[in-house]
Amino acid sequence: MKDAQYWIEQLKLDKLEEIGGYFRPDFKSQQTTSQMALPEGGNERRFWEMNYYLLHNGDVNALHQLKQDEMWHFYAGNTLAIHLFPNDGNYRKIKLGNNLDAGEVFQAVAPQNTWFGATMIEPNSFALVGTTLAPGWHPTDSTKPTSNQLEKLMKLYPQHQELIKRLTLSI
Image (cartoon, rainbow, N blue to C red):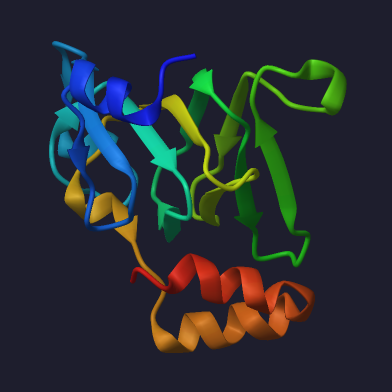
């Protein structure tokens, strides 16, 4: 099996300081949507966007939320856990990988306006995945939790406080 460094070099992935991992946009729709068609106004952007994303070892995809759904697709490596913290208090962990017999899935969705992050399940491993967003991403779409929002999450998810802290270390 190819290692993480192979994929980082071959796909020319860049370190994503903002939320962790390695990243590169790959395809974008040629069409754009106007501000009036977007919820809450917003900036004009592509209809959709597809990206490569790689997480490895102890790195985390830091806790954040988006204004649009983010679809995740498994490509190579080991199992990645997507941690979802919706406002209803029902934590959900999705295992993105290729072992369907172990409850893993090839595709998953982080719903809009849901706090989420990701970790590797196995230490010293990596996952190469893709993400698809529609409409395409704009910097104003992504929000990291404030101190008050983190406090509310800790109260809503007391059994997951350590995980929430781990997912906010890079913020």
